[in-house]
Image 1 (cartoon, rainbow, N blue to C red):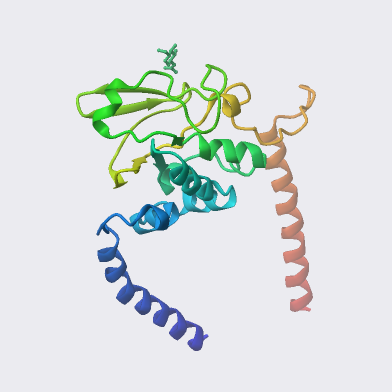
Image 2: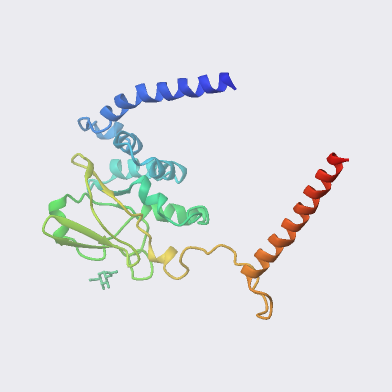
Length: 236
Ligand SMILES: *[C@@H]1O[C@H](CO)[C@@H](O)[C@H](O)[C@H]1NC(C)=O
């Protein structure tokens, strides 16, 4: 017990001492690396709040596709990067309920096969083409609208505004977004796959609340009789 306590305190101290240094490191932006060594996951890791996206980029191997695309095309690439809090505000289990192909598409929906600086957004023709596929209304449409310096995105299901520019060199630009862009083709017709509903019961049955409290009563009754029996046994 004492040992455990000491261990926890040690961990806490290590954490506290370590924390300020990692916090101090994260906002610093390194100069753009040469295109051949540029790694999207490293860029995101440095920014410090995209661990969910990094995992998805790796598991779908979209990180590799991004590197390949950047090598192959001179048009560059734009990534809309949802933060960890964007992912955690999705309904529980939504991501796991997607097929591998849908996970690929979801990630690719955040990738635009062209470099778009903030000043270029007003000239974008809607819908914007993403790497996920067709931008027709029931597939992977993504619209841009601008107002002053503000750039907003709409998928028809999700609206969000571009936050900070996480990274930018002459080929790749990464914007932070505070929502996961949900594409029509995956989430439009059948939204978040609902948890399996309990079989519906005939209406005549006692309402659930009553069932709960009455079963509690009977359990309480049993507990009470056990207690009485135990006390009785000891008092003998
Ligand atoms: C996106 O823009 C296209 C073309 O202007 C329009 O037809 C469509 O309704 C827009 N969709 C959304 C979700 O804003």
